[in-house]
Image 1 (cartoon, rainbow, N blue to C red):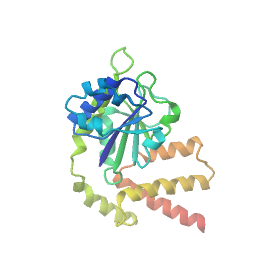
Image 2: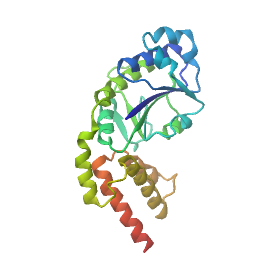
Image 3: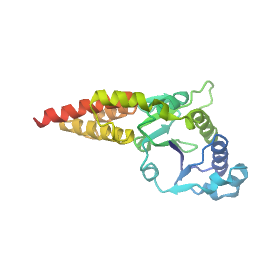
Image 4: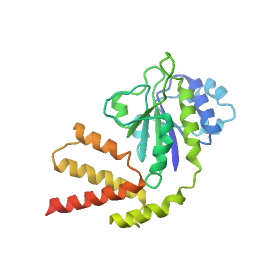
Length: 243
């Protein structure tokens, strides 16, 4: 599984350098910036002590949409819940979410917003789920680099875990559910998203409706074991609608 940490329009070069150092210490190396050249300033280099390779490997995109293209799971970080019904996970729940989807996803992105204003609502719509770090004091939020460090530490626990140990149980359930066990699990989950979206549109929920968005959000919480069952149901529904 590959992890990419995305910083949207960071303004403080020191935060970029510190983020690079945080990722390096936790075993990660993929850092992306959106619409920012803060990593080119000397201050970033000073704070990235011992992690210049991460800093040198930074990729820059003009928009967040470009940065998350090809990602299987996009986790948007936010200091507060923006929508009542959006799936929201605490930082210490993210590793469990990723672990439960280990056979279905390969590229995971964690998105961090601007130092002063975070992510916009439009940018959050590009994320599959939301996550935050609980605050126990009056101060509103953590520093950007500190937030990156928290998530890197949480995910480092499963980064090198051998997910092949769960493959047999997933395959057995897949066979019972009646779906193609030869299809890669990640392809199955992408097919589940597509199939569910098509069914929703057929019964009158367009892409912008609250029900459509909410159901696709809830699909992100589905683990390896349940994905096959849902895909089997979707296939049967498609067949029934054709009849």
